[in-house]
Image 1 (tube, rainbow, N blue to C red):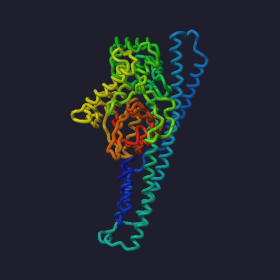
Image 2: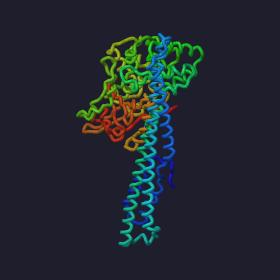
Image 3: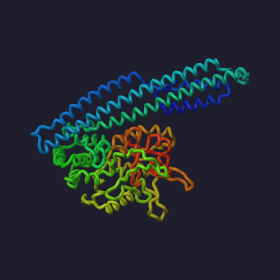
Image 4: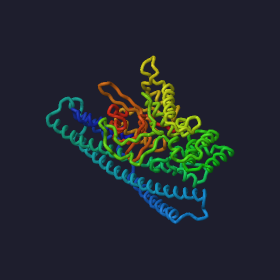
Length: 532
């Protein structure tokens, strides 16, 4: 019987297997068995009309959001009341600007969500039609053959029977190909829709902060704050996960801590300072620890805050395709630096280095310890480099990394168990999600895991990936991090100190050398955050 719960990958694998059986079948009964097996694979499931109705609703909501945006822009363009001066006027301007951008993003999310659902509806209609045609061909082939042969009938096949069997095999083969095309079309469309909808759900960030401890206007502004140094929409300071966790932690505060934290937010000199305080809370620090952090960053300008607290900034032109170098890596890569020192590995410490940077991305208190030293006030890139190296070596030991020789203390790599262990000890406490190791040796496995990767990074949870390759010198392995997603592109942090973008197709089909070099094209494992 067909199983509607089968994954599309399972369906395609079954169709491929049964199509292979059909192609090599040497008897009428073998052909009939292959046809029956193909008919037993479930058809693409879903209701195109339901999807279309939801898409139409999203389109209407996009129009409503656009109207809201127009009204907010009129408020901004006509000027705020003259009685709103000083900090009150600045705060009001922040709220109006954030409201305008929020309405714009809302309209865009509904519009693109609608487009994704219309696309899924059209693809599902097409896939179901192909599947119906394929099943019709299979049934036709079955009818050409009649019932199964008995034991003695099947022992001898006359020339006319053989010719009829082969004609039926051809017809059934066409039907099997249609079933496979239908499964592939439905799979591609479902992944595209899931990717887009997951992203837009994560971008509805202000709503993630479920607390009454701060006003709706403040929540709106916090969700809108960007890291200095790049386009705001590509460098949002607080992730969906930050907002959800901080709101949850605020709800658990006692009255004294609540008042202290609200005072810190009120006294912050810039929106960025406020947002970093919220990010520290989201990273799991109590109000006393956040207070000490606040004393170190209070009054600093947005550039200083970015340099010391956010290791990764996405440049506006970072997605421009500038072609490949001779080693098949992207020409368009951005160096991520503190002063003139890169956030990069020391020796063979790619796993600890990527883990250190990933933790610094989600934990601003830790980032400041690395960049600003014990006082939090240092601006010395050389001292930062020393601390970064020490942290990488600490994590190398923590993950029981191997060394070049048994008597050496020079790192030579880390196995997958160690990689998962340090991800869980260093990153998980600050995101709330433990990492689970998963091998992805084939294209189908990598394609299957993409929605989970993209959902995680859209929420603000970095995903470690392992890549490898083989040449005359043997195996080469490396760890990098997926840290962002836009459309069908993945942003990759390489612990050589760079970020770049690769396509989903690159990830699936062994072209990850674009983010490193031609020694390591294949992603073979991921460490996925699992909610807890």
